[in-house]
Length: 340
Image 1 (cartoon, rainbow, N blue to C red):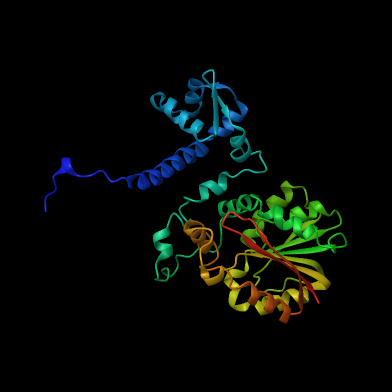
Image 2: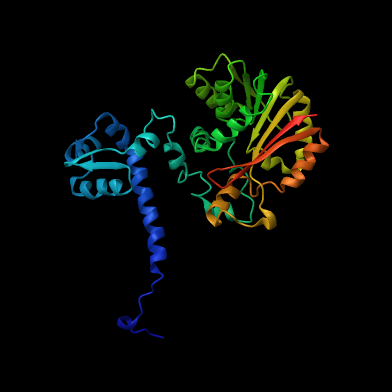
């Protein structure tokens, strides 16, 4: 059937696609500006003209006005008297010297090895071809995780641990699968007598060491190399912290808990921070958030808090507190359980 083009009704729902496309365009503009070093340059050269920026960044002048206006519209640049400077948000999130920098997290979304960038392959039922998997996360991925944790989740978890009645008397902490080590660093900052070990695989702990040195805690935070599932991680700890690690060990939780129990001193604290499946495996946070959570938790969060608590009890732990922690991909559940 041939349609009469001039009589085709304009579909009102087209705006649904327009809004999605606009989001992609905005991502591309910001990603380019980050890669270009625009915000770094403006931090050192505030109140620059459009011509100054174009010359420094080597951008074609015919695009400069609309390019910079797009960043103004996003709230990332301020414009007045024909001059531009970083907004407070850009200085906080997109400049290297800021402790809340988010640039590596932002770029990681579209990185070639990102689950989002290769979503088609990620969602297939077929197993990946032999030899395509990586030996482990690379530096950019780990840095993105570190930046993501600083969006409130790390702060909430470490404050809860600091509120435990045994915290002031604690002397040794183990961060299992701690990656960037920021949880251990934050707790050592809060308790001057505390020392910590971040236990992870060698290709990870090289990166961990950079954070330890950046926060000037090399005398109190060290690293140990190994595989959590098979290697000995020592004993004599007052606190063992595990955050977003247990998803790939969901079938072996009792074995992990027993090993943690052995590693803890009497009365010591296990701190677990993980996503759990909602009742009925619903999607309270929305489809995109739940998909992001699934991609990051090896296909599925833990099920369910009641079974998790029962496993803790069976392995000799007493639940001290259970609370919801706000996170970027929906609430996590924080368990504080003491060795019986």
